[in-house]
Each structure stands twice: as structure tokens, then as C-alpha cells.
Image (tube, rainbow, N blue to C red; front, top):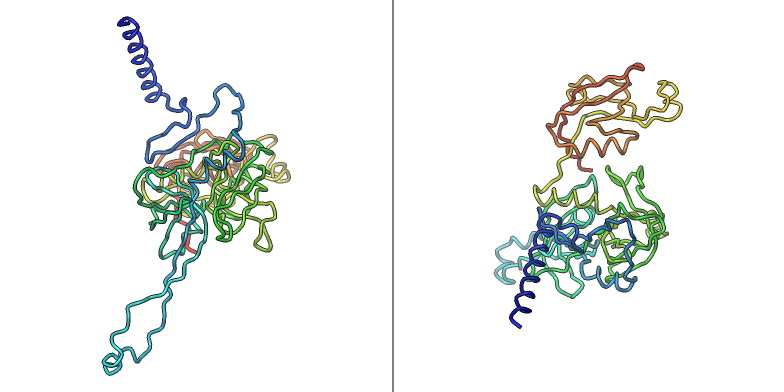
Length: 384
């Protein structure tokens, strides 16, 4: 008996040691691994063998994700004009001091997703940008005041935080880079303020850009019904893992026509972590305007199969100007990354840290040249 007990304890000890090593060195190998960095996130472990994960079913997926989706209320103070009699001492003598009361209008403007058990919530910038006060309603009926940690109008994302006891039901992050057109998805939010609602659809398209909705666009398009109030809510896969933040719809009348757009969580996560860490988002900038090369332009510049973007503007005293970039140059690559179109160039430059020295490869008058360029800090967008 003693021998069996020793064997059992040794086996348990070895198993715990292996688990500790994997958790420390390779946490991504654990299912739904909790990743601690700037903030604790739950991430679904990707399949490393290329196999497909068995879907848990739409009902189970909804039940898994719904507790993490909240309703975001914004309150605006109504400024009432002061009557001149309120300043008359005789009026105060007979009727007493006026009550210090400012009525408020409460609006259910959108939704949010709890991304950390610490109370961090991801939502849209346009949901909270004009709010004087913010209140969050959880799916279990609890309510809490929230404060804005920071927001980023260029991706239309914001992070707010609530303080409630215990670990909050945080969503599990999925992998939108593994999503395909035709995959089943669920949109969860609070459309029209009627209460938490789940709608079903498929992924209609990936990497939608040039929509004019924000500066950095890489949207997941879905036909799952997204109506006003769904903004900031969750787009989840058929395993209940978050793959996007519902952001906008295409509709002439304000209702869902089956064309909705969600921000991929790969973009949202990078933005969110910077906001939590510093309160804002810092991006690289070179100070050059560009235009995508049409076949006609490529033929004019005799580029052949060379891909790149045409420099149409160089801002005075910008990093590009100081490096010697000129209007009419063709930017082919920067920091070793090819830039075949405008969106790739914008994303590549914005991901570079300000102050970094990089090499820019260009074509000028049919000759390939390289210039050393110091990345600058992207200016904040002007308030509309």
C-alpha cells in the first residue's frame, strides 16, 4: 500500500511540475489560457496541427459569451435656465432655497464586452465620446458606474472600467485570422435598448476597408443583424470566442440590411492594451500622403510587376521630408516590409515605434534607391 501511495504522489508531483513548466514557458498551449500582461485576458488556444475545432453548438456558444456582454448607458446633464426670481431674497424668504437639482437624460447608446475579470470593458469610441456619465448594466442585473480609461477615434475603440466585487465574467478571445467567409457567427448586444439580444449569421467578407468609417479599417463583414445599440457588442464564433467588436452597419434607414461591420479582435487587442497601459495610443508616422498605383500609373512609371504606393505629398519638416523623400517617388518597402497598397503602408508605419531608424526602399525616375528614415509620432486626429 505504501509503495502505491509513493508512486501516486510522485506521478502527481511530476504532472504538476510539467503543468507549471508549460504554463510558464508555453501558456498558449493550454486551452483558454489566461494571459497576464498589461491586463489579464482569456485566450482560446489555437489548433497547432491545422485541425478544425469541433463547434460546441450555437446555443452553448451564446450561453458562454452572453454574460460578458454588457449594456452601456450614457447620461447627459440637462442645463436648465435659471429664473431671475430665484436670486430675489424675498422669493427665497417665502418659498425657501431652491433645490440644487439638475435633471438628467439617460440613453442606452450601445454595448460593451468585459475583456478582463478586473472590470475592463471594450466598446466603441462613438458610444462614449459625448457622455458625461457612464453606467454599465450586466447580464445578471447588476449595475455599476464606469469611467473612461481612454479611447482611440482612429479605430473607433474605447476602454472603460467598472469596480464590482469578485471576478467578472470575461470573454474568451478567439482568432479572427483563422476565420473564413461562410463561417457561422453570433452578434450579441442591446439593439434599440430592448435588452440583451443574440442574432445569427455568417462572415460575409474579411478585411473590408476604404469604407470611410475610421482611419484604420480592416473590418469583418457579417449578415448577422446589427442594429443601433449593438455598437460595441460582441461578434463571436460558433465556440463563443470573441472575434470582433460590432461597430457599424450600412443602412439608409438605420435598420439592419444584412451588412454589418466588426473590428477584428487582433486590432482591438493591440489598441486596448496601449490604452490600458498609457491612456492613449501611440503610432508611427512618416508624414507622407500616398496614392495606390493603378495599372495605368504602373505603366506610366514603367514599374512592371513592382508593387508600391505613389508619394503624392510630403509634409514640411516631417520624417519623410527630412529623409529626402520627394513627391513622385514610389514607396516599395519600409523596414523590410513590402507596401503594396495604401492600407498596408498605413498599418506598417503605424506599428513602428516613434524614434526607430528604418530603411525605406523607393523607385525614383526608374532607379531603385534606399533612404534612412526616423519614424515620427503620429499626430492626434483633429476633433470634428
